[in-house]
Amino acid sequence: MRKCLLHFRTITKHRHMVIRHCFKAGIPFRGLFHDLSKYGPAEFIVGVKYYQGNRSPNEAEREAIGYSTAWMHHKGRNRHHFEYWTDYNPVTKLLQPIPMPYKYVVEMFCDRVSASKNYMKDNYTDSSPLEYFLSAKEGRFIHPETSDQIEGLLRMLANEGEQKTFSFIRKRLASGRG
Image (tube, rainbow, N blue to C red):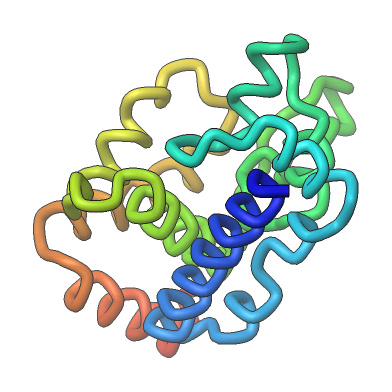
């Protein structure tokens, strides 16, 4: 029961942080609907079973069984994950990444920043989400345009801080380029 409560608190704290960041970014509705699938049984039960508190339960599930059922469910329902944005090319018949709409890139940015803050706690710096992103960049199945967009926002965060980054995002969305 304790792990159930701790997991609920962790995902709720993270979700509330994403909501605040999405409001700062100018995409409040994306924040309000962010990660609701984590509260359903397919993800919540697995999250409780593999809860550790310092990293995603999906990592522990992967280590235990070789893949994550919760992640498979989650990425197929949440458009702020680049893994959602793959489809078969009608010419080559091969799976390929496709560009994410900018509002989902922004939500992904808010998600990554919030996750870093949530798991790293006092060790978080504005460079932490960029460092995490770069640590797994090679071999990532993501459209180059999407990769460049998220990396650019994470670099801006690392170099210029939250206030300037969120201001940039709001201006880009308001200009219709998002």
